[in-house]
Length: 323
Image 1: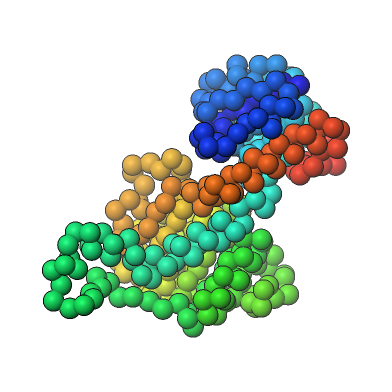
Image 2: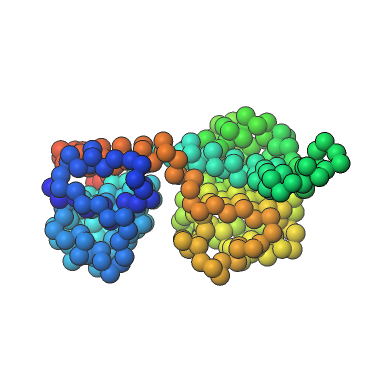
């Protein structure tokens, strides 16, 4: 079996091993693949693995040997699922590999908004503590999370993990579920409607997938429900937030802080309105990228390919839909 990895660099920039995948077939790994090179690089491969390289119907139609697509992520919107389903192509993803790492990033971003650790460290290294007439100083108000209310939007594995960590910090928690009809509490946090949750919140954590219902969820209208002292944390998908509205709220002081590991277009564009916005912390989509998490992703990807090869595919996102 011929296997092609179209964009393997972010998963494995050199600190992991492709050897377990090599044992499953004739493997070719590309660090990155431009759209115009996709068809040529797939060639006559039976199995294709992709993270962000788009496998459209047009691309797949030119690669009739493809029988398996392994997405090296949880989301699989980069693959034309309808085409694969109609042509009997098995599509798998990597579920639940980054739950703990993303929950950790949510709290890292929130703690940075509350305590400004990086800014204070830079000030110390710049000599400001050496020059201080007092034994301590702080450059911004410092915030204690105990007793604050966290509203988690989305109640999947990551959302529930965030709830558990927040509760350990002594935060009150509520959840806006993906299904408005849901009534059962999650991790001891009651379900509330979106507006109710936002009006209660000191912090909103976005842990929901990007759908037509969640696209643009954080916008001028929903921001108006928040306290001016509230923070918004986005480790889900950039398009959940209308970035122009976020930047405007930050500049006007109607939102106290925004921290995101994702933006609407990645890599980030130089005209993104969040660049230079006050009280805005941005990281380059790294919540998933701890060493342990990437190894887990690699291990699951190998098992996905092995299971497909052995005729019993797992983590299939179009199971039972093949024509």
